[in-house]
Image (cartoon, rainbow, N blue to C red; front, side):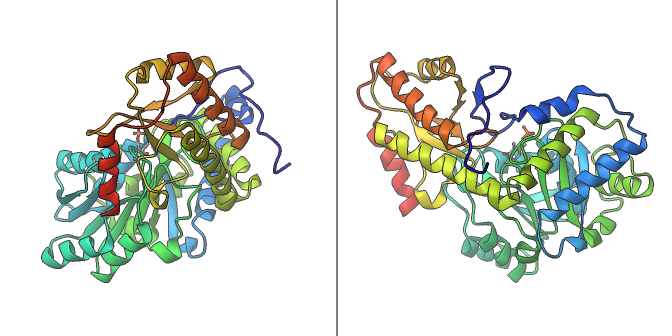
Length: 393
Ligand SMILES: *Cc1c(COP(=O)(O)O)cnc(C)c1O
């Protein structure tokens, strides 16, 4: 069973090689075919089951933590986490190397929390010694925000190193593990975060509609009254849920039902280790095949996540992203534009209901697309490689 190909999407839709929404299993979609009363015992049991399954994923020490689902997309949950756990007089060191770090800083600005932004540009990883240095100079910083996988480049940031640096200076750690949780370990006992967030439609492979905060219970208790927002108050959602078993406001019932099905699939696959192993294999087959075609990755192997990979666009003047996108779509694959400011790039996701048989087909489709466009070489422009050298420096 383990090595058998994952069934193709039953409805004939293309694979979404995007970091969520992503390709989900038919069982997950099917779980949305019935309606649920939000106050009903069955739905309350489903919410309870979901919260405890999620806590199981953070390993030993999970009894110190609780899981609080929040309606909305991932960004709503990031805002909920920041507003709830950072006191009004707190200050956050934001470790940014892409769009999601910058969005977190914009969120803090919007909700009136002060912050120090360490902006590493498009893809350079923040490092522990830089964090230690900044913290030693600014006693007002109470929290450090780490982006686990910065989805805009696909870089896997060194979470443990960064969390250790924060803790060594006596600061608390908040983590946006949106695109990593469920596939890359984030253990409570070693990383010791105060809180982290993720959402339904990434590595757990559910459909979009809500996210969840996993936080230390003492942090949840202490968060009372902090939030700038009524609906994004994590502590209020938590205490209401503890008391009644219900979500405070209308829950995305079908999305929750689909998510519980997705969590069962996750467990059957071998949990975080099993899910991660499939994604790494997806990435490795895709990256090695694309490199054989002449494509180059933005990142060195050391920083490549198994979530999404950025490739430079070929320098060949016959190449255009739009032409490539359409040719890939014709073959049944939806890819993603790049987000780099300096050179043109595109991204291919490794997550969702697909395996290395599929990523093998992705490479074949890319090869056909190049032929179709008359592109002779997939090699990137010299400027791209120069840019990449910065990583080694
Ligand atoms: C997807 C994602 C988010 C949330 O994005 P939404 O579009 O609001 O779901 C936040 N941070 C990271 C790192 C992400 O990958």
